[in-house]
Length: 112
Length: 112
Image (cartoon, rainbow over all chains, first blue to last red; front, side, top):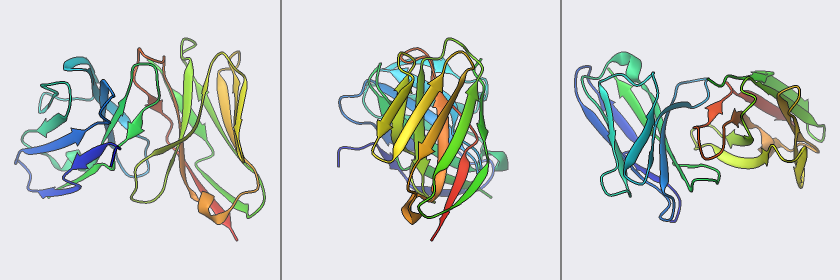
């Protein structure tokens, strides 16, 4: 499968716990994006990387959220001290610099 | 920053009829406008995109038009089929420089 993959696909956690999601982009894509999507809304930008450099973070991204792409390949998104408002679908997308973004299947997070 | 408005939020058409979804954007520097289709529980999938150096682009039953002066762009689906039923999102960006900003989506229902 040469598309964007994400793991896990589903995550249920209790409020206050930490969670980590992984995204594996299309292999030749140097850009990797994280979005959050809640029910009935379009994806909202969180952060993106070019290779291993984090180029931009949304003001939506609280200090409980951190993302890394240490070797310029896969990326992880960690949420510390989860809150019920963090429940959403977390989408990853990848692209080359001047081409369109292709999305992964997402990780659905439910915080109880 | 960029703001994208999308209308209508829901649209029902009879099979075989045409469907039109409209979006407006605020940042005149935006030059890339993709459309994504998202079926229930699945990832957003790119169906067509347009760059600001052209006014119209077609791919079989799907077309997108762009009016840079008015800052709006539209998706046209002709000869609709039940499998076109999904949520459609428009987005805008400065290609290569800014992340995608999405509209809130249009739920299209094609009635057989």
